[in-house]
Image (cartoon, rainbow, N blue to C red; front, side, top):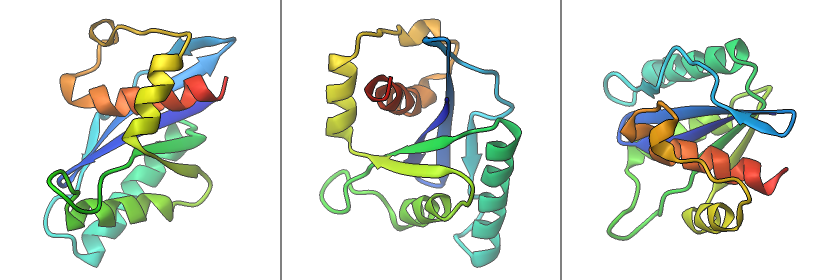
Length: 142
């Protein structure tokens, strides 16, 4: 099973790939660590973002995209562009897209039998939330 964890932050979709083979987690190499919306959230830019993500899904044979849920209101609410990016990802065909609340992610990581030290993954700091999202989903579905 290959999962892509996604954290949406501003105009960026920070990603981390996680693969489960023979009951072992692996972090496959990926050509990109984040996909960004270049300008304003115009229809053209959103279609380009969607096409780029769809190509990533196809190239790396991603089966499931797990997006870290953001609050809709309050101090830490996600911005309008982030919600557009989320909708674009949810409309991708050929891949299952799941929105996972932070409380569920935290609980899954706490209950998980697998512990992975983030500093040993070789990922960049901004990918930590995306990695934890993918790991939480996988640990629930072993």
